[in-house]
Amino acid sequence: MLDILGQPPVTLALLALAIFLGGIMKGISGIGLPIITMSIIFTFDLLPAKDTIAFVVMPILITNLWQAIRSSGWMETLKEHWLLIAVFLPCLFLGSRMLAGMDTKGVFLVLGCIVAAFAASNMWKPHLDPLTPRTRLWAGPLAGVTGGLLGGLSTVWGPPIIMYLVMLRLPKDVWVRSVALVYVTGAVPLAAFYWSNGVLNPSNVWLSTAACVPGMAGILAGERIRRHINEEAFRRAMLVLLFLIGLNLIRRAVF
Image (cartoon, helix red, strand yellow):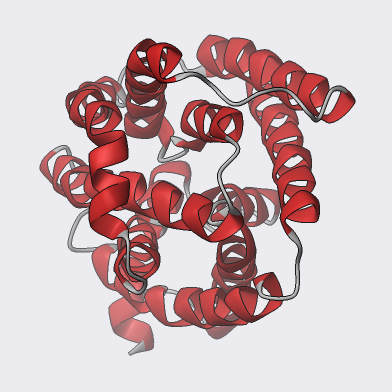
């Protein structure tokens, strides 16, 4: 198995720990798996950059599929966010095609500043009204476009979509289902796009597939924790996490 996965035991253990911790965060919040996993991998220089992106592709697919379909109400959630999904998918394809030759630092810097400022302002004024149905008609597609492009470039498509869902002020379980449903619709074509451009390939796909096991273990642990968190604490935790995501994007642009 070590010959198939192509990594020494210590590296495999650290990779499993990284995806497990990312899974815990996603189990609690519905988000954070690629951010946490990739940050740990980059910090300890466990994999090359493109192999790091490939590593999280299969766990993203499996964990989001689990969270999207394991509870009732997914059809209502799909009807609510179909327009966002409709623009998200083609932009995801475009972003994946741009990955090989584009310098993403400028994109990460601008988006990181916007995300951090949005999270900070919502923590400062936490009782703003949710978006009106009329505003959702353009805010949802805008989140889909920006999230798709960023996701194709880096697999980190969450910030624009998270910002949009925060403004809807959804209950925590509906939030998790909404995030997972949007993400899983992108995870299948994303894997296909990355396979077609060589980011995901026969030399790394088995490692990505094996990563689903510790990733799902983390999901199950995180979901148990989420049951004991009240709605307001959950929302504030999402804003803190979103703020940290913004700072991480800025870090990736600067360093």
